[in-house]
Amino acid sequence: MSKTPKPSASKDSSTRRSFLRQAPLLATGAIAACAQSEQQTAPAIQSQQHFKWKMVTTWPKNFPGLGTGANTLAKYIEAMSGGRLQVKVYGAGELVPASGVFDAVSGGTAEMGHGVSYYWKGKHEATQFFAAVPFGLNANEINGWLRYGGGQELWDELYAQFGLKAFPVGNTGVQMGGWFNKEINEVGDFSGLVMRMPGLGGEVLRRLNATVKSLPGGEIFQALKTGAIDATEWVGPYNDLAFGLHQAAKYYYWPGWHEPGTALEGMVNAKALAALPSDLQAIVAYACQAANEDMLNEFTARNNGALQILVKKHGVQLRRFSDELLTEVGKTAADVVAEIAGKDPFSNKVYTSFDAFRSASVSYTRISEEAYTQARALTFG
Ligand code: CA
Image (tube, rainbow, N blue to C red; front, side, top):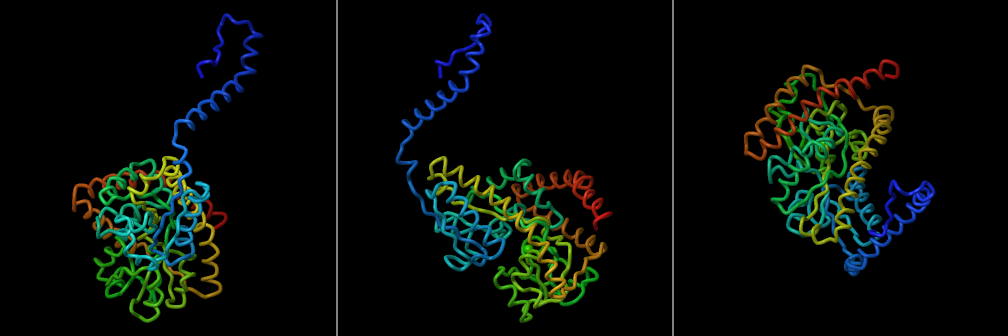
């Protein structure tokens, strides 16, 4: 690169034109020379090394959106690496049960996992902030917090304690409020209800005197159908239709105050990641980012059509939680979430970061996304 000529003020214009004509060629030649030099110094054997990873998931194998999202991630990694890193995806129960995914990846039984971090609140309360917080961040906002608002750094700090690195890999968007066999008109109607709801939303319902179950997705339909539970939430129209939940409950409530934009997670065993050549490490990271976007795109597209099928074909009764109910639930949720901050200094740090981002989001979202959808509805609603 040192041979590249430099134009000087003393050269005449024809010399300068000559340089300008040659410059792209000279630059290309310099880049090629650098690349050749790096190829000579990099161990060639490393670039050809092949890896086979296992990805355990908390979803039934190939479950629409969530399970297929894990498949998409594996497909992206294999395609981007030219087959040098192959990832075999396991559904819940195939290698480990849904509840065993975190330990399997932390312990190295599998190199990767796909799930949702609020399943791991038994490991640390703060895991819940990286998935969904009742009345918390929507999909755009949580992606913004994680990538540009300090959230990812906190997630890294937390998961490093378990020998893990996590990436956001997918988002459901705002979920539905759940399936019920009776109308929920006031907050007191939650009292005595046996409802499936994971994470912090479940804790909110517990405070409202419901009995809360945290069943994995694959067990929900049977539990609702047999009356083992009275009510459930799952995801939204696309996923709920796939499980046939409309065959086990009559009323479908909105909005999903408990999961306003649930971030799914791809977790990687930190030692397995560090053992990869640097280009494969980058491929894992960027494949996660691409799969993160892809899943939200799919939910956005498919929820619309699934809702029409649920209502028009299956006669599902849509109901909106009242403002009074949402206000009461919101107050309880604020208490529940703030209490996590008091559990330990790290949880307080995560809560503080999250809460500041939420406050800022409320101010801007009100005059951007929220204002726009209201404006659109004036003509198209
Ligand atoms: Ca859910």
